[in-house]
Length: 264
Image (cartoon, rainbow, N blue to C red; front, side, top):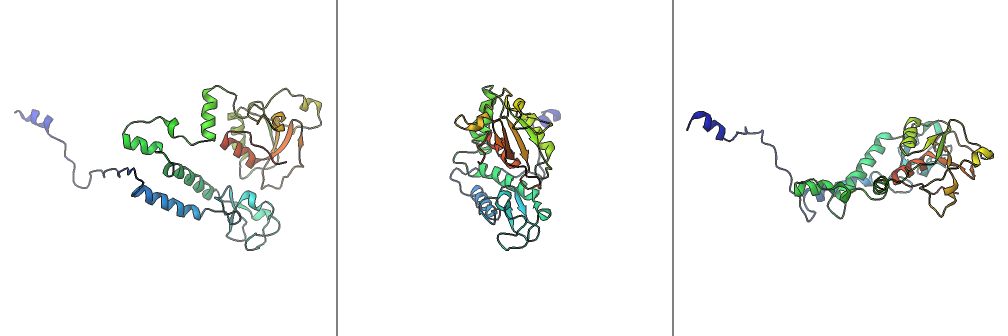
């Protein structure tokens, strides 16, 4: 056989130490590496719990004078008084948003969706079957699921028919990011604060499509948004088409793809 023919038939060599490691076995009974990963995630989540409500932290903040960490909503009544655990004085200028911890919590949530799903996760299914699976079968439920169906059915966007005025300063939720979310959701930004007593304001002919039909919130189309932890706290507004709402409510609406009820 000619040398060039032998060269074509020769199997390529892999030098020692360069051979890629084999992929870990996908164990259907949940033992092995996946079980260890779930246990490690459980231990990590115990460290990511609020010092007051003991749930997984939501918008984690520290009060500055101590090392205790809380959900932002859990300490809104403590600013200006003291830490509810150790009673160290807490002032608004000392409140710090822990953005790195917030990112870690979001990552843990995504990992839990992968590791704790009763069915196979999309990643597991693709690796096991060695084919691309339909993403819809393994998508995160609730908000993302509702958002996909809404788009497929060509229904109005989440904030279609709604107007938003952003009042005061925004640090935890930067104003530019909020404006992008409003625009992406089909809403519109108001440059002037809406006046509840104005006939023009109350006669704007728009409807909040995604508000719950059994709620008086379906009549509201103009929201005055303020940041929960800022010094700016506008007076309560809940009149006709104009309501006041915190920025955390707005973010929760985006996450759940629903115009959530506002506390009275």
